[in-house]
Amino acid sequence: MNPLPLLLTLSSLLFALGLLAVLTRRNAILILVGIELMLNAANINFIAFWRYGSVEFDLTGPLFVMFSIAIAAAEAAVGLAIILMVFRHTRSTDLNRLDSLHG
Amino acid sequence: MNYSALFIQLLPEAVLVITALLLLGVAVTIEARTGRPIPVDLTIVISSLGIVGACAALNFCPANPASGTTLLVMDPLARVFKAIVLGLGLLAVLLPPARREIAQPGEFHALLLFALTGLLLTVGTTHLLFLFVALELASLSLYLLAGFSRTAKAAEASLKYFLFGGVSAAFFLFGLSLLYGYCHTLTLPAMAAALEGGHSLPAFAVVGLVMVVVGLGFKLAAAPFHYWAPDVYQGSPATSVALIAAASKAVGAVVLVRLLLMGFGEAAGSAAWGLMQPGWSLWIGVLAAVSMVFGNVLALAQTSVRRLLAYSAVANTGYLLVAISANGAVAAGAALFYVVVYGLATFGALAVTAAVERERGDDSLGSFAGLVHRSPLQAVALLIFLSSLAGIPPLAGFVGKFVMFGAAMSASTTDGIPGLTWLVGLGAVMSAISLYYYLMVLKQAFVREAADATPVALSMSHRLAMLIPALLLVALGLCPAMLLSPVTQALLATLLGR
Image (cartoon, rainbow over all chains, first blue to last red; front, side, top):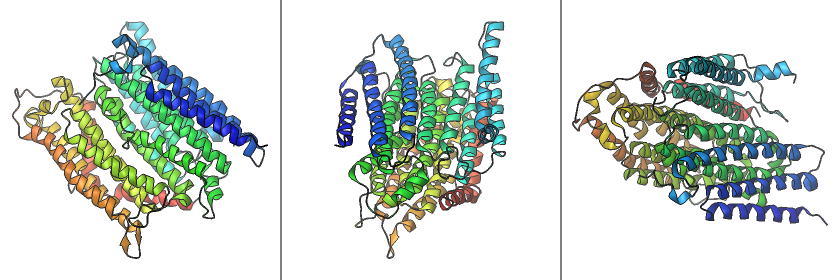
């Protein structure tokens, strides 16, 4: 049995869960967690397509995943720095309390 | 490719990175010696020299058209837009950050150079892995630049920019993974080859392409992915906003054009009225309509000039998406010309706003009252920038819109009936509406009396940052071929050369 559809279902579920977290959570750190879930869903896709779909031998899939893991780490570092900066000003990471900008 | 060839290929980026590291070193040394941060003027001089050096280095890069598995591409489009991005970056550097906002100008300008490096790399690749890495290098630097000043507003703007950007990057990556699954390759020319034959994409590849377009829509601030834009424009330091509004947007447009026309020309569908077919052309057309309506209508209600410029950015993205949705090389070339002209005008308007803000403390419409008496130079420059944005002849913005809409009409004509009339007509109506809010700002500057008419003092580089775009807009309005034909020819050569 070709496990590709199963893996794609898993990654889609993971992506949807991440998106759900982003849309419903009001805490900046939990939104960041949601974004990481979405990025990792894409990584599963790359590996799955490479392992079960590729016609010739190449390493594009795993290579992409290596890079995207590194970028996700950099993104988390930058994100936490920004959240820390916001926390210094407002003493909270709750997005509902960020309302200094409006028209 | 050996390492020396690779280095020469990367020479402009290498110059920028070396300058950034040098700048950090100098900043640390000066701070250690004198106990005070490096003077802003010095960082401006060093980073401008770096950018000019990178521009010069661009001439040494050998041509390297997209093929097989090339990561770094130096086709005509890349060459022209690397020069343009460097030019827009140089303008952003000339706009000095406010002294009370930015405590560490050395780090600020170093980050700006890193962001420019990312933007340059993004323009010069057709490999989607490399594209993603380069885009993230630019984006991560821009998130930090957006929050660099020590105000609560900047921190909030930066967080919103980051969260929206992170989600859109995830969409982009997931979309890429689906496209990889269908094509089994990540270079655009190979993708185009895999798609050839005219059979329609399977559902998951369509979803992938939609997600990639969503990711780029964020970068371009197209509605409905624009929610970060007003807050970032309002809260972030003017220099960062200038980079985000001009250079980053131009790069977003180039990537979109490259991706759609070079890689997915086969999956275009049609946005022509009555002949609509599913495909990216239709999605882009819908995005264009939503952006034009949203941007222009919401801009009417703004009292903060920076927010007004943000909504005008959304509206202008709509105009250029109209031309991209026509799916023609000439129309796309006109769109790329327009994004540069738009970038110059918005940059100039931001520079004037920054000057007013520094003097009056805020960017509300009332702060612009009597600008013509306080500083005729600024008022006239503002007149040029806003008239160009509104599309009043003989300025470059008028020519840009005219060429773009004309090309969109003729590219979408089948059997003598132009299919995109609905979008172009909407664009024309919305442009007329936009005249109202641009004139509202100009009315404050020229008609209203100022409470006090003390002249405004400006630094030399700030003055240059207003003069250069103003002169360019007038020159490009009188002689658009200076920029239009190189951009269009570069795009045509790039598309045919694949």
